[in-house]
Image (tube, rainbow, N blue to C red; front, side, top):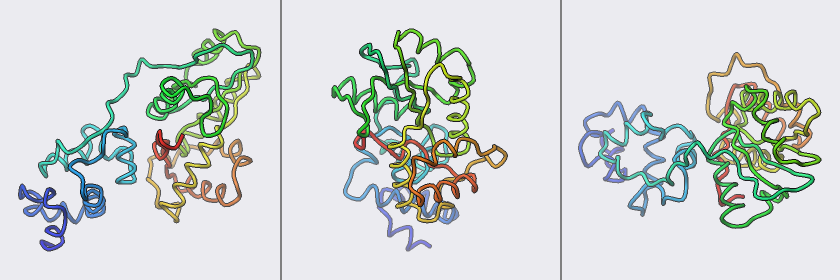
Length: 267
């Protein structure tokens, strides 16, 4: 056991905690080896271009492993590596939408999570992009996962746009809860605006996950075993058979493919 620990980057054990706590190595061996690989030749974990959740998923396959008060953060602290983390500063939650120009017919991407929203907003605002993942869009909205709980929030926003037609392209996590939001959004629209899954984003998420976890059950576990599977039928026509079959197993196993598997460089 000691030899396995010493074979890691010295920064992981130099303060003595990991050497004196071999049970931690047994419990977190997969994460420690991932950390060791990510630190190879680098003074920091990350280069500041990814959000904490994006970096966490890229390195550990779990977008919450490096969250504040998480086991991952505690592990870094105990190993004396609290300062090694280098993430993009977290955006403030008051950022709600970026719709730069009026159009008679509008296509808006509504994002469940903040980091993908920030990436899309930056692509449009900073880089002047008009296409996201090859799709022409006119704005992006941060839905924060609770948008459908208020029947007025999104319709009221869309009403201010004075557009003749609005198509909402929804993009969220690929799990039971995320697809349920898509299904609820379709019900909420009730013909007032169009709703469709943001297909190129979902397909890219699946392709990335299929490479990382050939077995769908290798994706993150969730506590959504009691959540009904809804919304799959809305996304299935946009997918290839292999992608749809993979997603079905992810959902049946109450697993999760997070939005953060896609980063700014992918857009």
